[in-house]
Length: 133
Image (cartoon, rainbow, N blue to C red; front, side, top):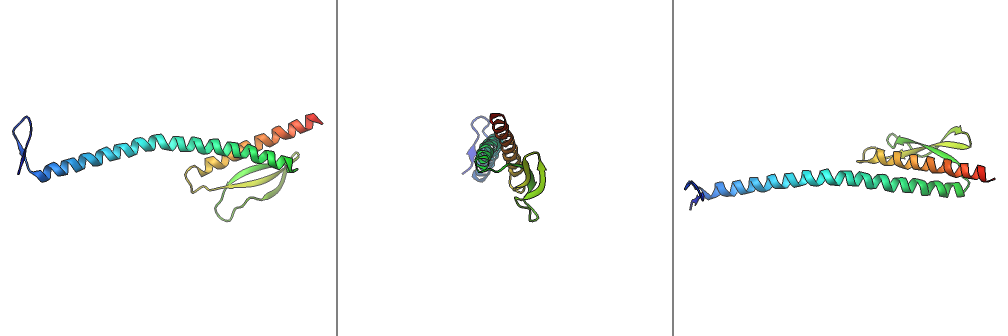
């Protein structure tokens, strides 16, 4: 049985109404996915940065307490790269590589946030130690 438009008196077949509703539902779903993604991704990236910054600082404190004096350089984890001593030094610090998962969303940013926080905290602790002696 055809459906009538409320205002025009035009009759629509039932299958056309169903298709119209399906298209409308899909459009609404796509709009919601785009909206959620535009809100969720920045929140995810901010949380990754915050957690890696915290982790870098804590890791530096633990290494410092264990007598380690390091600075890290971030490198992608591909091609067999691993966390290792480069053999170089920067003052009292050994320079090590720090690998990050560059194939993961936010992996490079997370690796860089960790390294920046670690290096900054290690220099701060070493400076306090030197001035406190």
